[in-house]
Length: 457
Image 1 (tube, rainbow, N blue to C red):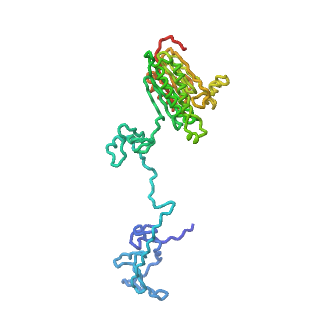
Image 2: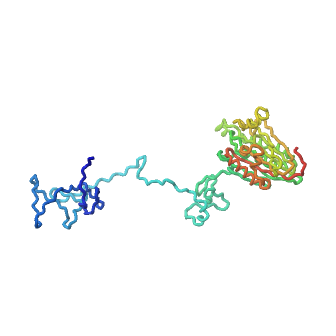
Image 3: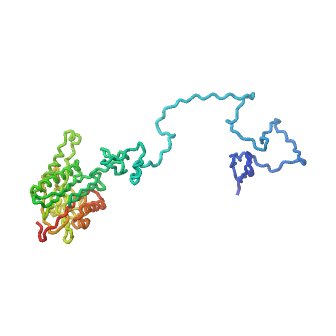
């Protein structure tokens, strides 16, 4: 097929004599444009014998042009200059005067918009918080001007483990926001332990608890556990649960040493918790103006009192109490009935338990503590277990993942009676592993051994 004619290759660069290769368009040494080299003629010039060279023919137009120098006299090509590198002359051969200097351009204020003269920013910024693993070794060698480390007694940042936490809850060293105190709480009081966790879906923990130990007038020990669950659809549910748990716990720990019967003390504790939650609705007029359509704070409550031979439970709402024998030789049991839509459907015979709790209205509560609650009906019950065991006091954040008594017993460690804090942690972990859709709070109260043969009351 037809091809475009190709120019004959040049063996050396006409400018620097650098050897060339076939197909080069530019010299690799000096950059000379090889396309400007005229093609080699087909014939060779005639050379006279003896070295005489015939005179060149005159140009066709009759003008005697001077021959261009192709060498500097030493066999090297004449250097090539750019036009700006050679001094200019006028028609008489005199140097041209230098051009006048350009007037200075006033600096204009930067125009709004995107600037292209800025240095490129890094794709990733280094973390401000130091690596906690390096804090211990780097602390003695802190640079001058760095933020001071937390002094003894100050709250230390959970991120950098070095900076002091200010009153607003931020680290003065790395700026990390600290977790709220109620996001995860643990407490152990004698044989009683409780754990509360925010869970994996809620933005705050609206649960609260109160645990403690006291003695009856005869010196016999008594354990107390109160667990409250804030109603999320109400205003300030976290304040409601905290106020209720504190009020109920304080009344129990005060009334039991005075000789009040545990079941009566539980009833009075629920009333005290109700008054504490109702008081939260008495807000200033300015607060009511800012949120006139807000409802009153509300929460549920469940509690247990354990003495040498008596177990008393009390509740309002859908938090629960379970009984789990320590030896697992007898079946576990649920000791409370929910104040909920599902429980009402089951009690009325309209649905079985599986159908009722599968309904989307199942967790709609029919009893709670709060200024806008229906007529308050505290529920109390007393039991006399015939063997050692563990009383589980919990919110629905736990029993949603272990609803039946058998499921709760399976989720609880076998040594929960002797290691209640560990057992409470395991149960909270069980709920988080299941999804952690709600706040999770559980208190474990070991029941002491009683003489065999005592039946349930």
